Amino acid sequence: MPTKPSRARRWVRDGKAVGKWNDLGVYYVQLWEEPSGTATQAVVCGIDPGKSYSGVGVQSSQATLFRGHIVLPFQRIKERLGAAVIKNGKVIKNVLGRALQRRVRRGRRIDRNTVRLSSKTPVQEE
Image (cartoon, rainbow, N blue to C red):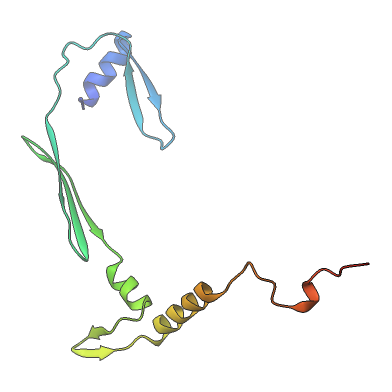
């Protein structure tokens, strides 16, 4: 649980804690003695899933601890795959996406286990 900076300085001065720095350069105190209380804070995480955007929130009974807005790649993936894209009321076909789909289909048709060239077949000696 968070504490005041003045209280953390007092703990370090009195020998109840030691001050340390983590890899990100954030200062924190590590307690050497048992804390006076072991109360925990009830926290709830909420997720609002969506097609293009998702929201994430962390809420305690007293305050909102975190709010996040996640942009999902649905529109970019749809454009890459060549679906009809509607922009400003106009239907735009994505030629690049159709070419990508064609390349993917070609890769599925190739049988990589068979030898295609006669020059690569081993020569049998008698």
